[in-house]
Amino acid sequence: MREKINQEIGVITVFSARLKAAAPYLLHWHNNDYQVGEIGYHHTIKRGETLHHIFEVTDKDSSMCFRLRLDTSNLHWTLEAISDGLAT
Amino acid sequence: MTDLQLNDAKPLIMHIDLNSCFAIIEQQANPLIRYKPVAVAAYDTPGGMVLAASYEAKRLGIKLGVNVRQARELCPEVIVMIPDPAKYRDAHRRFREVLLNYTSEITPKSIDEFVIDFAGSPSLRAGRTLTDVGYEIKEKIKQSLGEYVTVNVGIGPNRFLAKVAAGLNKPDGLNVITAKNLRKTFAKLDLTDLPGINVRYEARLNIHGIYSPLQFLDSDGDHLKKRVFKSKVGMDWYYRLRGWEVDDVNWGRKSYGHQYALSHKTTDRQYLSQLLMKLCEKTGRRLRGSGHTARGIHLWLTFANHQYFSRGKNTHSQMYATQDIYFQAQRLLNQAIMPDNVTNMSVTIYKLESCDPEQMGLFDGTRIDKKALAQAADKVNDRYGEFTVVPAIMASMDDLILDRIAFGNVKDLY
Picture 1 (cartoon, chains in turn blue, purple):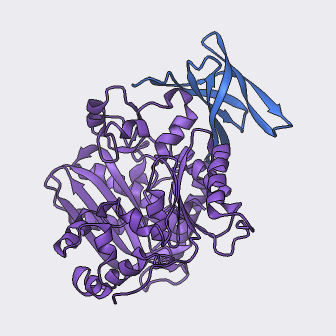
Picture 2 (cartoon, chains in turn red, cyan):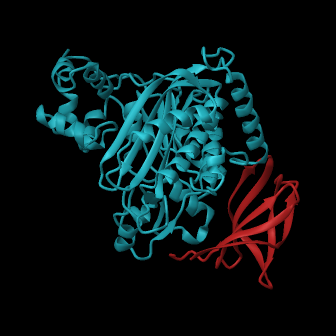
Picture 3 (cartoon, helix red, strand yellow):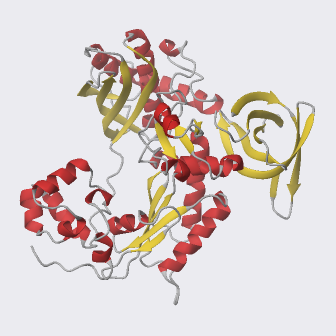
């Protein structure tokens, strides 16, 4: 089941100088903390001149997949959708 | 011509395609749907057409052309998703960047396929074969796009045989076709396994006693040219099957077009005009972005009863602004008689010329103003997002036409 959420959430992000990469580490949603397990895909999109980063990640338990968007104009994170990996 | 030899040169052409591109990228992005039947469909409603299916879904008969209702009948657990074009375009760019590490002679054939010519490439240093390079590319693609992503690699002496090789042993295969194993490879294939041979060509070949790729290969060149295909196409096939190159021509951009499969099928002309305007705006943006004008336009409508309307015309004046294109397209739409609800609409503009909008038609007193307006609107849309500024007819449209990936040509990605 895949569900659109489109809600701003709190995210802790980590930047590694060694890997030269930044990625979400933990997200807080519905009073729960979800530590990021695997980053499935990361890409960018442009809306007008604003760059957005899209991360599709699972939690450590691999029970949920989260689609996150970082708006670089204000550094706000939005949880766009969630998926439990089952058919709709 | 009866006795042209097989091309026994070292095979230096590589054809690579991403297995089940849209579906595998979605499975890479969401680990929870890996190893499961996944179908990416134009719409996730029962009538939505499947565009790509994962290998797990393909094994159950879910493939391009099946609709969502049929897919769910074949497999109730199938995970149906709508496309995410921005992600697939990103995957395509990463794919291309991997290949550019080996040679600059790469040609994108579609969003998920490339042809690479390794002739003269320093990638083939002493002791290193193209097969070695192929395996290395597979690994580099996994590193760049994700460990779940697989590609098929085909190597051959020409583009055609490289593509045939890429079609063997899917998914995640690597195959080489040379003069030595060509006949053995063809013996295992059907005619429609050959790229470019669809059921209609197969029927034509059958009429002339050709029922297999080996029989096709053994056919006389003059017979193919004069009797079977009645044109030089026959001779092209004669050379192509033997591994000689006839497909490395770059035809250049000849048209721009957009097509839309309507989610809401209708005969409402006002609604159709709004959709038409949006198609013309998308087409116009690409036309102006490429620095061209156009002097030909074609409109195609498909109806629910499987009939169609197809009409094109050459225009006296150059089309540049969206309004120019829409004016001509609307005139064509006005000529359409609608026997049933419209299911598909497409607009194509052609007869492209490099942009010289200072040259005005005799009665086009506003040509320069229209050009300036079109360019100003494009700049606003570049800055603030597509369709920020729209023609008035589109004001109430919201997102009536969704972003989609075209099958084939991806030149506009670069």
